Image (cartoon, rainbow, N blue to C red; front, side, top):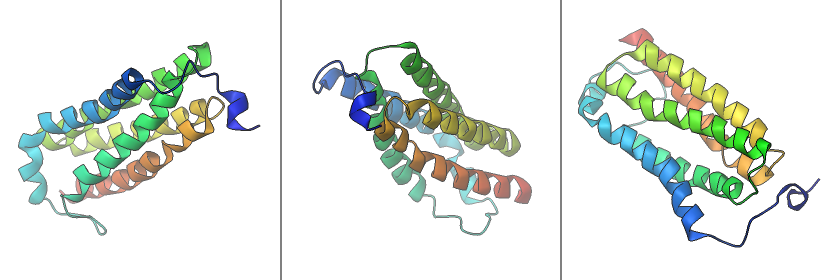
Length: 165
């Protein structure tokens, strides 16, 4: 079935929904990083697993991922609010809560194993969100795939740091 058969849109482009979508992803993600900024110096002194990128890569990649995810959220917010849409958005909201908490647990608290558990839960929620988004909007589901892949890589890095430090 093509996407147009799945999607019941409310209207044409909405600047309000676009701003809300960006606020949910980029705003919440950036706020979590901002609140954890005092722990960023510790990161530079950690023993790192192989394939660890330089620290400047993370805010760049996350900013791009948040913008991409905001497109998927926009697509779902542009639908009628049926139960499947509400469920999909709820799964994503829970993911965003954990995404918000992760930098504070990892950077501020230095609780690397607790952060690893949060990262694993985030990946589970992302996969669940992809599955929930897909019947509603294939495009929206696909916007979460890069974040799921990056999160899998982040789990590798988090596990390596937890074991090495």
